[in-house]
Image (cartoon, protein in one colour):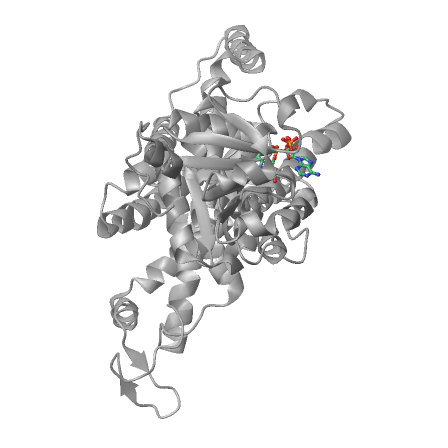
Length: 474
Ligand SMILES: NC(=O)C1=CN([C@@H]2O[C@H](COP(=O)(O)OP(=O)(O)OC[C@H]3O[C@@H](n4cnc5c(N)ncnc54)[C@H](OP(=O)(O)O)[C@@H]3O)[C@@H](O)[C@H]2O)C=CC1
Ligand SMILES: [Fe+3]
């Protein structure tokens, strides 16, 4: 079936109907859902089943026959059967000769078998043209029509015509086909739905590790320290006070971690005097998860903002304010207005608000629908310039919050510095390194390197781009 199916509507003539007919082996969940969607899109559907008479719950308008009878009636056959049962196709090898067999199967584990299911099917019926497709679309999504998250269908085959015929069907169903090349890619395609947030794994581990470490640090320096040295139980602070320390600290560290790899990359390129050598793997990995790190940092900043907003309604805070007022009344004293403190708190809050605003802006511009609407230069400007501005504002927010507390030794509990200082180490390091890198002498050199200029280390000679073979990326 090489006819273009993209404009398919139900056809009336017999021959056209034959061209428009697809066969589905298996009347299980997937076979039924696929058949339902096919019928909706104007195809005729014939099921091939072991027991045609007892097949039930099939979509209206579909026919059920034996495997061989059904296969004879269509050029394209979808195999909606679990891999373990594929052996039944060997008996049909004659009738399947030259036909397109679409393997929709998935496995339970990554690399469960040595060869992919599609390659296995191709070995069982070598004279059929096997195409891998549809495994990324669930039965539920096909049936319910909620295909927003899984519109993409990866298609691969060794037979180009067969692949394009299946891609036409994919389009006719309102889905988006992605050509993944030959059947050798089918293993990767089969592993795809089994991966659980692959690009999120490293950022989530980093975030979880930092969260636990900072929480333990705050627990020791606040709650356990008070319990042991002052015999005071302030464990209630875990719920809001400690949480509202952990979230901003981790958020700021994660935001700085988004910008460190760029700084390291610039230093490495300066040192090598070239951009044509691969970065170490760890740096590549780190660069690839910057967006995820940034989005987790944003979610923690959002939590910090919400926790901060509830401070005035906390019982503990209202109690402290009231008891302060009563103490002043009882002592008949009035605390004078501290102008410096007023400036400090206002500046700290203002930097926090502005920092959060740019944080959100960065998050919004990283959404595909927004980033697709800006060109590469605009995207770089937002993510780099506004990103650094966010880092500066948020670091300023933390610096003014802490002020000179780090100088007062009484705040060091068991020689441990106040928790806020932990949030400043990485961001300050990034900002200092960035400041050095934007010094005109270094900036000019980095710009030249990124435009392709190279310094030959062996001969001490300098080559322009093009004189030296490009070996690797960057
Ligand atoms: N469910 C889902 O969301 C998705 C499923 N898939 C893939 O689709 C395929 C089918 O899945 P699903 O429909 O859920 O599975 P089911 O177990 O529900 O159905 C499989 C069908 O295969 C047929 N069958 C069972 N045993 C044999 C056998 N020994 N020989 C021949 N045919 C047999 C039966 O149909 P009959 O009785 O008519 O012969 C049965 O209904 C699988 O490979 C799966 O990985 C892919 C993406 C998503
Ligand atoms: Fe804050």
